[in-house]
Image (cartoon, rainbow, N blue to C red):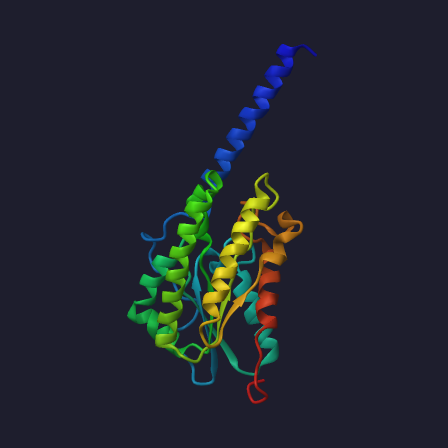
Length: 263
């Protein structure tokens, strides 16, 4: 094969890689990380008023709590609810207040809304995902894995996560909060080792914040996706698919216990 042909092949391969990377970032921005500030509050999945004998679950956060990517529409919360229905005679009432694309600063604003606070006050259990959009920043993290920039973003996220937990505890001091930590959907890419290290660092920081509060549990999910990540991702390669959400739901449900009288 002539040097000219070899050069053309190399050029085509390089161009294809660049186009694929650009397409990946555009997909992230369009389907996963778009700004939530202009999004209207989603409709709740249950009645607004808690029934006296109901086990009330309120879910907060981003698209992961909305269940984006699960063709059944259940998401991890749906699997948690299914499991709890097997273990308690109480009616399970579920309200989903999560917003696709939401970041921690936007969740803080949402938590200051009177209706949201009313829902949280009545909650017996709170589920939450937040931080993925803060970390990947609309795909910017894939372009630049600068340690300095990521450390700044992490410090800001930690401060906002602490504010989130404080706001929740101000409204409801008793309900256990299950904060679902981050996984790395990019660990099979060329820079997978670097992105995995960043995700682990953010998860450790979040777990340290959660440890400062009574009954706020940081639920690990990183290990669930570490091997064969694509088996558990939706076609957008970011959100979990049905099996991915099921694994998260089973992990969360395994941490929930009832007293003898509640079963």
